[in-house]
Image 1 (cartoon, rainbow, N blue to C red):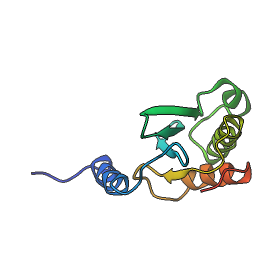
Image 2 (image 1 turned 135 degrees about the vertical axis):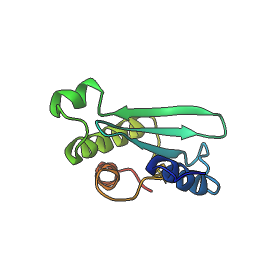
Image 3 (image 1 turned 135 degrees about the horizontal axis):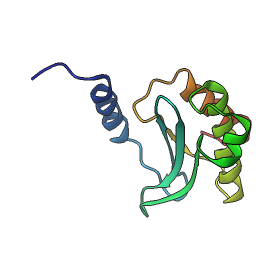
Image 4 (image 1 turned 180 degrees about the vertical axis):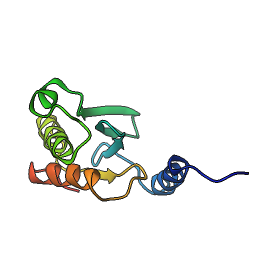
Length: 121
């Protein structure tokens, strides 16, 4: 078997984290996905198998403020957007699932933006 790609290693980390991290209706899971050009986040109730709230750097309101969705500025806007949408649905606290990505750079900016807008995790 050959060398593992960077994404294969991320998926191994993601599976390891997901073994112990389950989103409930009381404390849903906030799942982050980061690509080279965009970042997206969902708040998921794993018990019901439903996405409760979602935000992405491809959303119109974020795209109008930040043309390039792959930077830290866009990630911070996405974090603020998801926190505002979650608070509108009555979600105050979430379990943060970084998706196997390192808690650094854009993932950290997204988390900081969500915390600044009032989401607890």
